[in-house]
Length: 288
Image (cartoon, rainbow, N blue to C red; front, side, top):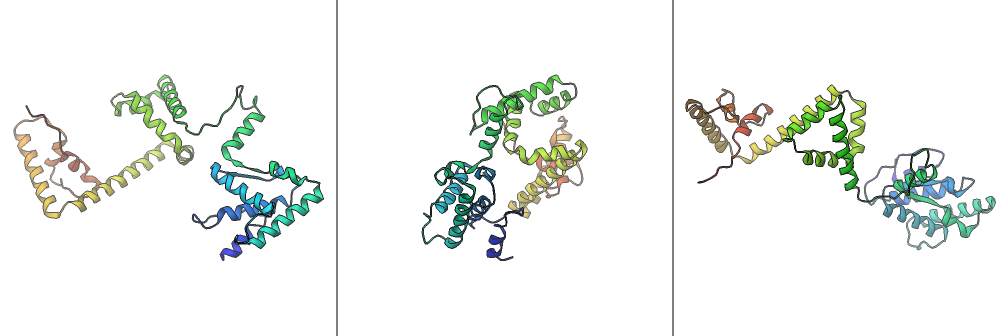
């Protein structure tokens, strides 16, 4: 479908559309024109609602619509004739419906998702269990931290969740602050992971996490293997294996270094070599 044909199709307001296009390709223009086309079909202007993610996008769309209705778009504006035609349709329809032209700008509903949710909550305080003034919070870090803290406390007190909380804290050396920080960090992107949690069983989620970790480990090891030259990697593996034998023979207690006692230990990028790479990591030593 050509770009021009897609733009015309978008003006068919009786049809639902999904508009996908790269940045700077004119999505705002198409949506603003669709908004005008919809205005020319409704009984009241408030029946047409446009919602966006950001105030900037809402303001830009509103400005385009108002300039078109006021006939103030510059002559150099792309698709100027289409803008003029759509504005004329809105004015003619408004005259038939008895709309007051001067009031039209205040009756246009072009807003953010946050402001729409705020409007709905204020309109139904009892249903939404809201009994105080509401505010839209732009930076929700404190709320995320409070939610994470409450989730940890609830989990520690709940019989079904207590084991999961203990496992999490055990991995973090019982650092509640770090656990809270990690949970709070997940909340801004909850729209991506919440559906996955709701749609999959716990065992399926475990398999997905394991597969992701294996992929990340393989990619990281492949990058490490690429950085190291083949002779250097071979020499490092030889030294690590010899060192492990000496430590075993000297009676050292076993640690991660014991991975180099296995006959297949290597610095390959296979995930089976993770233990060998980990055992070869630098360690901190104190000099006295």
